[in-house]
Length: 540
Image 1: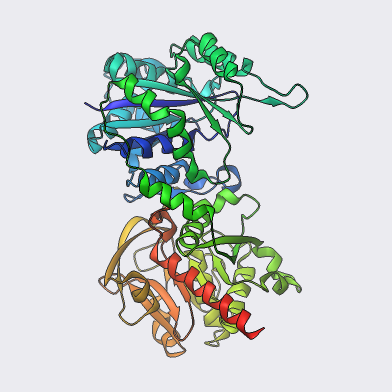
Image 2: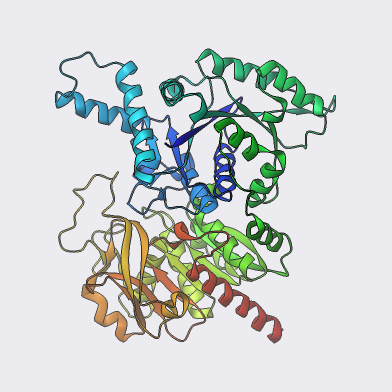
């Protein structure tokens, strides 16, 4: 039987519940347990697929094509398990499912209510994930903050699951803020006490309390007071201080006793955790021998979380090479100004990640042209591949006015377009290609050198494709089609021969990068950037 761990948050949002849950997953997996993870989000959107990156950050895509919360990226990177469509549940999806069932007559004429119908739908999703994965432990994070109206059905659902599973099969962890008052030099527990009281009023008594703070809590009295007034054992009050590197969190929480408290609470007898590899990885991260400067050119750079997985993948690859990735966040629209090229000078590499819409695309064209003409390593992902193809078509192949149907439906040369059978008719909430698709890697290419494999599987999220009408022309001008769908119909990757690294891929390799196993394309890109740095230094 799967044991359940529910993680809630109190006092304020943005506490890092996801990192806490992901770290716990890593610690339990290190003890030999099979772990799965899930996020319950209280917003009414069916999924984050149509939400502005400025509102929500990046949309994380699973292997089976679900558009999900970015916290699922943390879970996959820490636990190193592929999650699925059941791993993210929103209020919007819950209500959609319930309304469909009501329309089909599945409730036999009953009045549909929050309890039991909404809560049962939530419970079914949690239980379905446990059944699909066969996990020893399922960690379920409830989004939002205790006290939010929209979170209440989820809290009631996890209360019922705990009651039905039995006392030894469910544990509740509450993550709260402990503010530090500099004037008095004290950490204050009263907000935590009130948050726990609110949670208890909803029928859930936390078994473990995680105290989030920016300053280390050195006064043990804070832990004793929290334990006393929140009715938990003192060793079940866990300190969680802000760290310079989020991958240090599992080691900190292991030392604080989080996993031991959880295992005791759930009656799990496990061996000592195997964390030597993780510790060695963290030590490499702490002591980079050099730095590499990468320009990330995007349209949502004011919110770094909009490109969270890309930034993490860059860091993973750099750390593996003994370096620190110094990311220059460059607004693509700034590159459209006459002085914009100055923002690209002094970079060791340029990466253009995904996005939608025409805003900033001329700046992305400029970034691709700068990299191509000056032999700066370039990595284009999804939109970054498409803009590189458009720039090449315009400036190297002589197709003036070349563009994507998405940006200019009247373009005379739509080098990025819908493929036969595709159209605008699909809802914006479901892009034309989502999830894992195979890619045949052409031999003798940069792609082949990086992957070391003839076929790979990568995750997609896009509506438009490289137009086959322009294959022959662009290839004749020097563009190499280095990745194709196995049937040869779809172009998955392009590159320029003779360059240190100039690669564009239609898919999102960042979703498969792990801190202890960087993605090979990011590794190839970082190595090329370091080579560029070394050669430029030798010239000067």
